[in-house]
Length: 165
Image (cartoon, rainbow, N blue to C red; front, side, top):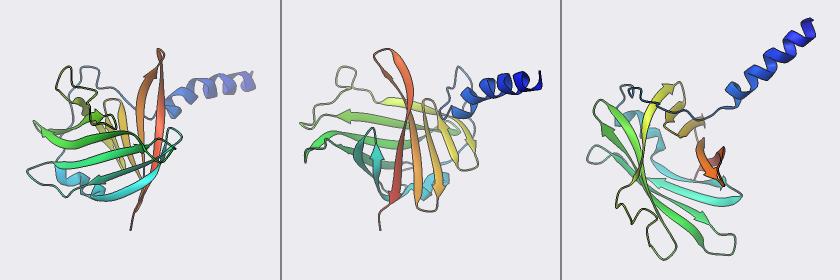
């Protein structure tokens, strides 16, 4: 009986423990300010989705932290690039992104608007945006989790990066 109870408890606990992203689900973003993300400033490199990736963030300017992300195609070229920024929204923050193909045509050209991830929660070294989480795993390491949908199946994809010196 006890073994069965432990097995059920572990089975129920596993999905919650494995969940690295969250949704705002109509809630209100918590208070936050841009300087709380100043640790991101600089250049980062690593892997994600089976590819080499790099991202760079500027120091806060005009109330936002702006950067770019690039994913290699594994053949000496680029799969895609993103222009990103962390911006104040009311008393909170949001992460915004626009994606570009190697020829600089934009994925969001139809709408002309970025994809926006409002802040959901901050817990110690984890910043939960709606569908994306940044986790500071060390002074010079981070993991970004992104919820993506492929062929109707949602999954969380990690991008593990280290600060370039």
